[in-house]
Amino acid sequence: MHTALGPHDGYVVGKCTIRDEHYIYVKGTGSERLLADDYRTWSEVDRERLRKVGATVGHGSGFGRGCEHGGLIVWLESWRLMDLAIETAGERLVRANLSDVVTFEVESTPMLLD
Image (cartoon, rainbow, N blue to C red; front, side, top):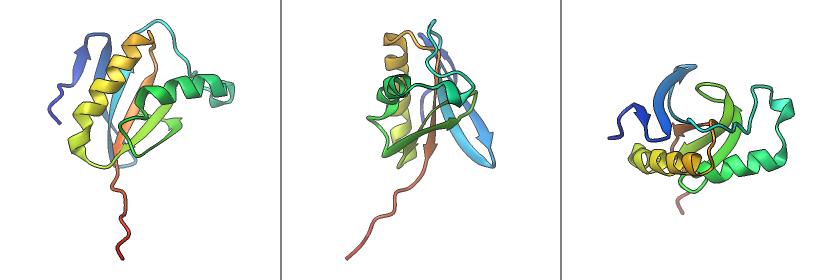
């Protein structure tokens, strides 16, 4: 990963450790937050809007408690994808004026061999 941690134009990049796993997150600095801390208030429309922020770079995504608060978690196959993932999510958070968090986890995808 070559992207610097800290503030960028319209978003912040950081890292955290949860249960001995290392994560990178992108948090928008916009004025609208789609997902509140209480997951029971999350609408399907808001989840789908946030899923579009980070889903194109990962091999899977889901919702849960990320680095800062509840939000989208995207699984990447390799650390080599992290810079693209950060840039893509950051740009989309800025474009949508969001203050939500997208958390990235690197997780290999098993490959079946014949």
